[in-house]
Image (tube, rainbow, N blue to C red; front, side, top):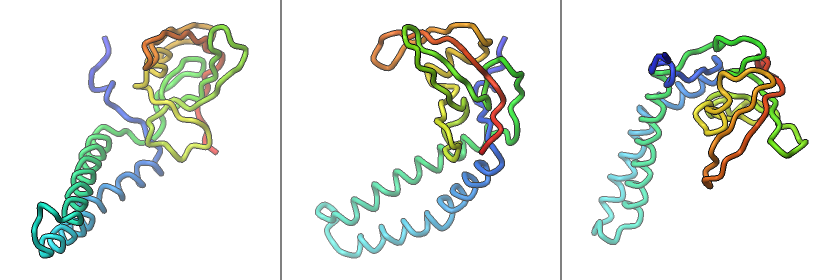
Length: 166
């Protein structure tokens, strides 16, 4: 049985965690103060129904609050460091090479949180349809998943090795 808390874990490098923590602290502190000042300045311009600056500032505030919630959830569930993994078994923090059924081309990517955007290779989320389908698979195994367009696709796991960074 899978521990449901493990499903929400985002494995992050220390660098990614520090970057996200700094963004969270800025947005939830000085960022909120800055947007409040923009809204107040726009309010002073008069009629709010026809005040584009006010509506733009309120929209910006909504997006910022959404990002704050996203970051809080991510940081609360983050584990910093190396994900537990075994070479040859697909899991978060692994560099994975796959081949799509009926295609000779190989694709290599890092299976990790999308927040690991600093990686020099493509990053696929373990929660994506492909990531969820291959998670836990061994080299040589195949996995079938449903794409966003509703069609299914099958891949073969060719390699799964721990990601060692740049």
